[in-house]
Image 1 (cartoon, rainbow, N blue to C red):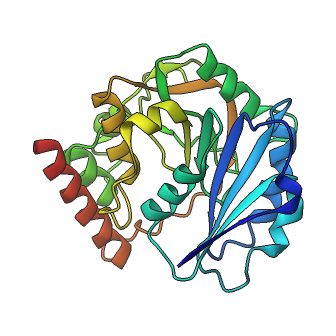
Image 2 (spheres, rainbow, N blue to C red):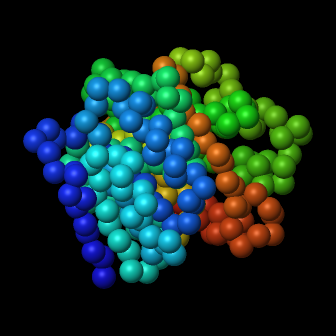
Length: 269
């Protein structure tokens, strides 16, 4: 059973410009920095946090004071990432919805969220976008990507970056200036900036993807519905990337392969 709670401080006369959806399970070490950085990143926007407590062990109450407007969904059992994203979409009311990981944060001097809304406002056919993403150490995360081919999967899974450099360079749009903006195939699922009108047309995330490729599938469906998927080089934020599928013989790697197979079957149908 799902219990939806509306934080008392969230009621207000001004509707939100942006709903930010987070799924919280056990990432307590990342939450303070992320939540503290949201307000300066929002600029002049009216922002609401939609927090899914995915049956966490420590609860969500400690995170409520960070933003004045918070809606909480409490899961009595843990659900898949796609299922939790759908709970956020069903609660969303703002014109734009940001679905993001908890292992991220914003630069307090950069109004990233306000710039993302401005980017979407100037491009009414853009249904899904992402900004520049950096690792905390300064490395670039290449958030705009082309659809995976078997060669790309092999190159990444077997760590053949040197031998298959051109394949991976094409996959990550390394021929494009990441301070510019351009259309792309799909964007990293850690930061999916959605136009809610487009999301309503495309529908919910496919919960058949237990883990991985739900973001790739969603972008492909955006394209099929006639919406643009775009990279915005005008702004940025940070991602403490945690790739559980990095090891070849891990359980998460097997899930990754299974989700890729499911995605190929959907593409062929």
